[in-house]
Length: 472
Image (cartoon, rainbow, N blue to C red; front, top):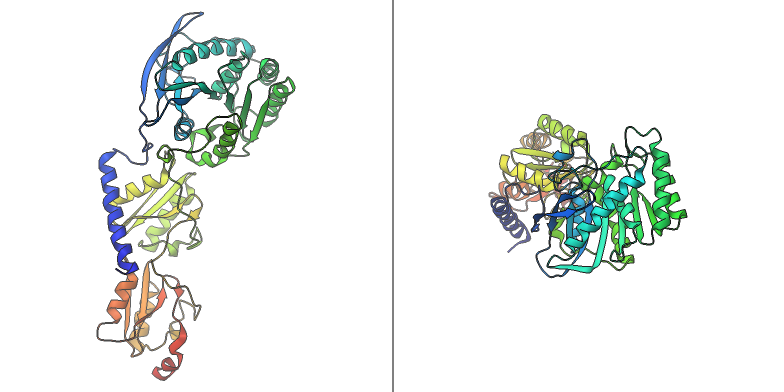
């Protein structure tokens, strides 16, 4: 079986697989393929008494599993906060083989009571949450399948602050702390930054567990000078800690941990931190994370509308403009008679493929984020630079009718191919597998057909230059 036929069989098989996956999942690409095995229960906490909702996710195989307890951020509408927020933190830990516990703080979702509000006393507020975290952790670590000797506690924003407060209680059963843009801001506190810095120093003086902090330069809630001062105060007070400055992230670094586009910013650093404290920090189940994008093929410039396959120029321009305006993560898939652009979500590339498949057939990714990933035609010969693609007079063997056909070829959409033969025969094709189509058309009753041009390049090797001169 030739490489070309094997590719076509592979492509058809891939399309069948894609449809099979679509039958198994309502919307592939919107959630991990790996099973979440989630269940919810309530834990009673005290002072004052309340019941807190806890969601626990478990990997499917192996165990007992290390535990990551993750605390959520604040909201102006606490009852509407979902049981799982900043999902990629959860997916990350599941992919590293952890069980993940997500407690809802007082007043959030179905949890009882309300979080205390102490004007500018961030420490007192954090201490109440820390006591609740302790009670929840004691309940969760006794669940079947949990390895109580391997625990990390983390949180995002308000949950990160609560994590630092919990660390100050010196829990002997916790290996490390993870603060994703951790902090609290009360609107009625006239000096919130100073309160955070002072609170960080107070927590740091009581903490001996290693922690890692993640902050970005364009965080819309906590300014860069503030979180730098918070960390410096925490570390100078004696807490072993590491700060990761993630730089700028899109419009708001505070949203880094809720986006697939942010994974490349923090996952490697957190892996290294976890390994450094003797905890798992290697991916063991890729089904919980978005698929890595295909490599950049450098097929064309990102803005080159003429390189977009299958689509008429006006349609290609509209689709490409939509893609270029979309925030990361983003993806563009193209098919024989349509295209799809998606952004955000769990796996933008998979979503684009799924949506394109619903519109047309034989879809493939064209661009992901800032890279062209279109593979081009299989078995495509390398450009020879024999002539410019639009130089009709450079094409050997052809008569006037053949040159007119070649001129028409240069106006057709990609993928496209043009073949020539020494006796003046030619073949032109555009669409699915144009190389085969062009060679077959050229070879009907003619010998020696070879490709002359493919997409935007001349690929003909001038080994028959003498014959070409005679033919002219």
